[in-house]
Image (cartoon, rainbow, N blue to C red; front, side, top):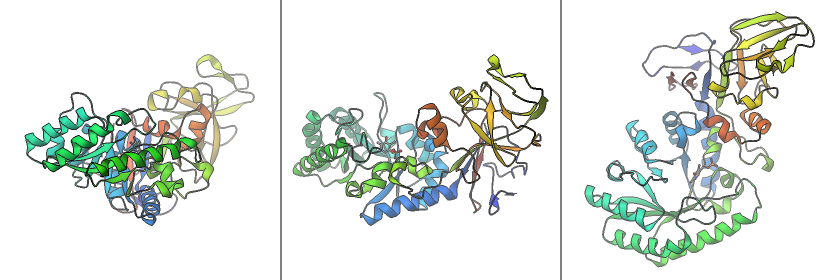
Length: 406
Ligand SMILES: *Cc1c(COP(=O)(O)O)cnc(C)c1O
């Protein structure tokens, strides 16, 4: 079926094959624009390939809240040739969804069993000699060489091998590779301040990274290197090496807007619709605490989304929505299930579409604007929104979309 919107007709198909309702009225819906994902991945992989690098699209945390499987498929069709996730469970879910491309996962729990990962041909990061040893045991169990990416901590002091353990890690990897237990695919690391171009830590990390790579080569390994997240893909072509790992930029959110317009398109639109309107006289207080009082007679529109649906309560008094042709203020407190929009004397009706945020094409707020208003980053806004009462609808110009219910 077709959902009409600004621009071309979009096709939306449910997972179970049922046609979606034509009604634009949604309680709370995340609309994911797969064409935007494809566009962003081709921008990013285009930059990478100019440096001779390949692209791993990062789809951790359910594709930053956009839907890991749909994003993964779109990314693999648009220039990415591998995928990255944090946890083993996320990696196995991609395999269960039919993804056959290389998938790397890097953040292991002490009780993660690597044997199913080796069997499913998942690339595994090793951050310590102990972790590598566990991977080798799993490879022996499955009688199959595990694909391992050796992670050096170059200054984030988080996940990754502490420098003092690195010689032991590369020696053990070289021995395991010689024994046919592993393939040491890569040496890699992660940047702390790539979103602050020119930050001195970036070059310092790059130097440590190069030294760690040379130690791996000296131990007899022939790995590729990967270091760049989205910000470094966009600002540091000299750090692309053989592979880049963009995450946030895949979703069209720019981690370095101060560097200029990179031509990314936000893929997520958060929509709802008006469930009731009412006229109130001047002097009426609105919502819990009556923190806002109508200064004149006005029409209020009730929108059935609140902080339980991911609208931060701290946006109370500081947010606008796009409704009936323009932006309007949300007044009073954001509640658990609802918020109230001041519409003045304009005509607003039940069922009217409300855009909480989107790419900004129609003048609606953006996820970056929400983040700015409450002192966080757009990453946190989009990853927190897919919740029990929120639906997610994946749309594309071609008939490849899926819709997911709560
Ligand atoms: C999340 C993550 C990325 C992607 O970072 P973005 O800033 O979203 O591009 C890359 N590598 C690692 C190890 C990560 O954890």
